[in-house]
Image (cartoon, rainbow, N blue to C red; front, side, top):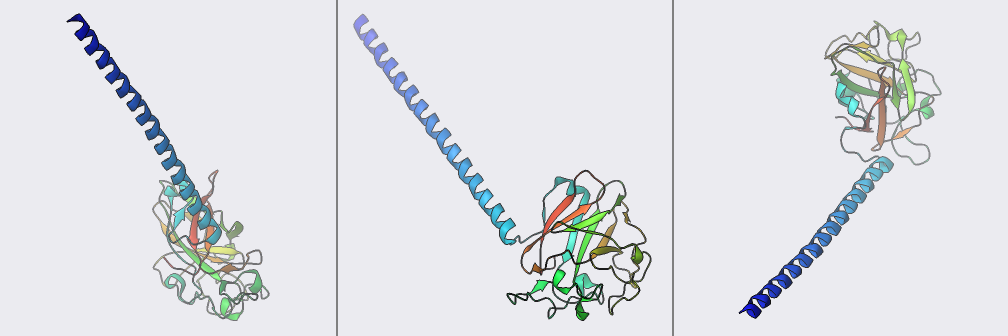
Length: 246
């Protein structure tokens, strides 16, 4: 009888040992599979992010900085077309914006800077329109705007001036000069450009940027890195598509 009990106990111990071994192997396999999925997922994400930066095929407004929660990019218009973001006479000229080497359409910067401050229709550099909103609790001051890391400052000559980009501005102030920007109210007509760079909390405005001598021509359907300096330690950055309106 004792022999049978010992035999049963030995058998039971062997079963427990086999179960422990199986569980140990299963745990190892599960851990290895989880690591493989993690590595594969990270590699795939890295590939797509790198591809997006290289090709510029971004598809949506993308933010690069969590601080952008206080500055919203509501809309933009980077088309080689007329009436950018429904602004009257703010037109780009598709005939003017052609890459001289490839024949591909571009937003014309340095190539069209030979006639300073001319409108695109007359061979000048082209426009980009950005619509932003101060979503913070306090006013902000828009110190400058970066387009593909090229800094554009506020054109103070536009302060309080009526927007008119229908003809070349020989005096200055009717629209931003090459390499600068002006701030516009939304929905007003005539459009009187803002007299300073302050944007109140909750306020939405249009930003009219004119490319300049330092701006490389921007191929259409490529990514544009846009940054806003509002006095914080870090810039607020977005990625948008050229040749598009959203």
